[in-house]
Length: 340
View 1 (tube, rainbow, N blue to C red):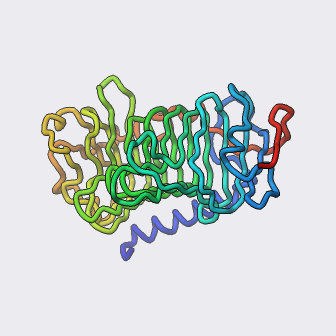
View 2 (view 1 turned 135 degrees about the vertical axis):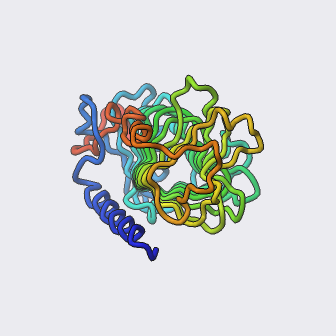
């Protein structure tokens, strides 16, 4: 924190977070396409019984199958002990708290990465805002907090925490903005194409942990993780990534890296054959962990031209699907709000 670069990062990040939260109920936070997203059906979740539902899952269940309207589920502050699934036939849902410190979704399941998640998203065109999503299973094995197996999903200002496989970023195009993601082992994993912008990545690994385990399986797959303008902190040492798939692709750009990052930067997961096929790149990062002089020989220090495709939302097609915050809310004639 003593360097001028870190001070600048912290100051800018504070301003960005303040702006996002100040505009929560007032303005758009993302580029939209030609679809009218100005209004949405409002459903309120309140544990005290003053809303339409007491449980988040009950609100999701009330949305009709093959939904074609934007639905905004506003979750009042509280700790919601639920294992949540957004089914594939219920697109266009937003689930929003007021702040991740006050709106907490928690569960404690471990084992299979597809069965253990606290929160599973299977529906396209999904948005989550200002939520904490946690798996409290502990450090004994795989325990996913958030699984995203859907196309066009965005997360703003969310806190996502577990230990191993915290975020199963499985399939689809995804956007994470100003999120806090914490874990120790392969805690951002999967085969989505995802942009992590201005996120805080915190490693709990004491030694030999890996932040990412990206699963790109062939050169024809347009998948990979990009971390743009992020911050990496931690308590021990960790690698930036290791290849779950032979063509694993991860890029860090304009990101602050604390001393938690091991000098070699990347791990081959014991398979030297993957040295020829993985794509691990770094571009203009800074901080004590960003020194590339001792990086593995099969990673890349990107030029301006090589980095350019990873520096915009074009890599996830975001300009076509990221949508604005609704300006108007309405009741629905098809969703029957009943207190549960």
